Length: 341
Image (cartoon, rainbow, N blue to C red):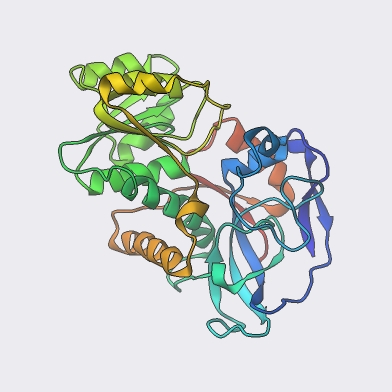
């Protein structure tokens, strides 16, 4: 089968199309003929070799057999959607021909993958494979970020960094659905328009304005009750100034670098809470995986949660797809088309 391989850490040019022999599914596993793969910024972190700098637990997902994201070579990608074409011994819930989606298993930049059946999400027939690759990681990440720390309620102000990305737009939808006032930060006017279209009440162009000062101005110096941050280095310290008394800051990534350390006692003066997590911490059982996935799918069916697919690239153009993601050109989710039949 064809697959993208990373044989050295570096820039997008290290993503090269090659061939791999795929094993038959073992006990409890299935083989999925992939139709689409979703890009996430963690793919960029892994390609750069930043998983080593972040620590051994940065990638909280299970690698494919023979794949290890902390050593070379490997096939990147955690989001996938396709059709099962073989099942291993003991698999009862799925059969060949079933449409499925999944996240959290390395190797989706490929025409096929062998994965544990326990990671699969049944893909409804009214969703395309591109949508199936777009919703699992970002949709369920939005779910836990909104529900597990300080669930927004009417009257709360939520500040969402990178509000025009695939995850950011879903967070805007969800916070607005719960009745919160949403402030988003973005880099361009085009992204500001996308964030407003998703429902953001206010948008800060951080390339023109200081987001801390703007957040204080927009909240009459009270600050945001909840701040959700996947940017990291250039935003985290500012979050501690922009958050309200008894507010909550949630950090879930470091797209532009690791945040600087802080003095824990600095949190006392305004009663600030800080939390961190990754999706794998919140889908540790099959019941929890399906509960979060079904909540996301229900939101999509009801129309208040909308998937935004920025662009679909062929598998061979994975390098260009990651360049678009890394350069912050994208608005919404970027997809690789990994197969058509």
